[in-house]
Image (cartoon, rainbow over all chains, first blue to last red; front, side, top):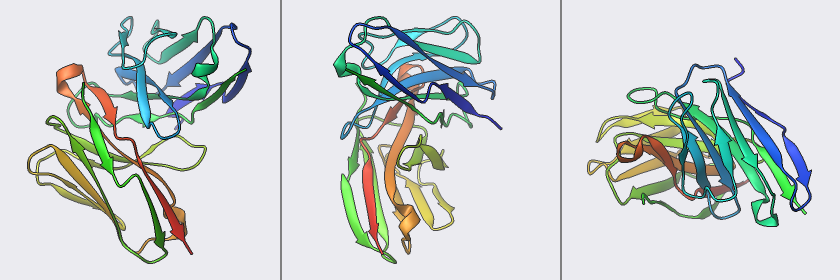
Length: 114
Length: 112
């Protein structure tokens, strides 16, 4: 029962570096999400996907790109990291609608940009 | 956009006390979810509510889906130290492709 798995768990980047965060889910969920969590601000949606090959912007998409080439994977990319992107990133997945729309979360990736 | 207002922002209580927190929305939700986040972990689902007026329990936790569909309440009875964490309300908005909206969280500290 892996659920939602995020890699890496921790990362330190220098300003301007790029990286990709990987999210994998084994529950055959249609929807996948990337959130960032900052102190006092709760979870803010960066991008989401309603199915393989589709992506959409959330509330705070600037500076991030995503891809959903396979249904089970959702990648979050930072092309040129900035200190403002220091945060904890969470991936989540859910069924598309109806009973079972609750989202399941990964363990998080703690990213520090120096 | 959608906004979920959660209160209180933080709570400090004695072990054994009951806890109550609530969440209000600027629009109607058809599902209300309550999550708990332990330090250094991802949020974990506690209770899911699917019908207006529904009252659901999970051990010492009880949650209610408000009649107006714009609010929900979570109660914890007889708190224990492991109840410490951040509690989030959340819901998928059918108006925006089932994006999940989260409240800003209630931080609970239980003093032994």
